[in-house]
Structures are given as C-alpha cells and as structure tokens.
Length: 110
Image 1 (cartoon, one colour):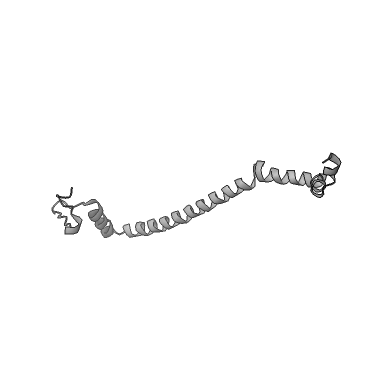
Image 2 (cartoon, rainbow, N blue to C red):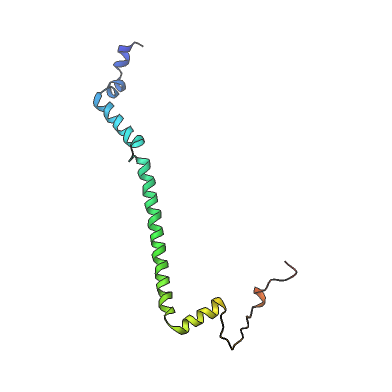
C-alpha cells in the first residue's frame, strides 16, 4: 500500500482531522495524566465514603458516651459502676467474686 492509499482510508481521515486529534489528546490527558484525573477522582470518592462511615460510627459512639455520662451523674450509679468494673469496696466490707462453673477453666485442660 502506498501512502496516498493509506490517507484515503476512512479511519485515517477521521483520526487525521485536527479537531478529532486534539480532542483525543485532551481526553487522554484528562483521564490519565491530569492532577484531577478520573482515577484519582474515584480514589477520592472512596476516601470520602470511608470518612463518612467513620463519621457515622463516631456519632453513635458520642451518643452512647453522652448517655453514659448522664447516667454517671447519679452518685449511686457511679458507686455501682466502680464496684462492678473495678471491684472497689468500702473499708468495712468484704467482696466475694462468684464465678459460674462454665466460666472457670479446668486445670486439666490448661
């Protein structure tokens, strides 16, 4: 094939059009090489979605903590919490920790 025959091909004439060529270069540049390319944009959207999920999780945790703080404003609740979680006691009392049979590890299995 000669060069003149190649230039007469329908696709070569279409791609050889300067407007189509410039538009193609522009699209390639925008999709792959630009700082705001399509791929970087998708990564940023995924990051935003992950951050929004974290935001929702932490808002729920804040609500739970606010309920706990309101509950702890009562002195009897603070005492109950200290006894149950930290096994604190008054000076004149003894504490007995009762464990159920299924919560005790067998000495044979250890």
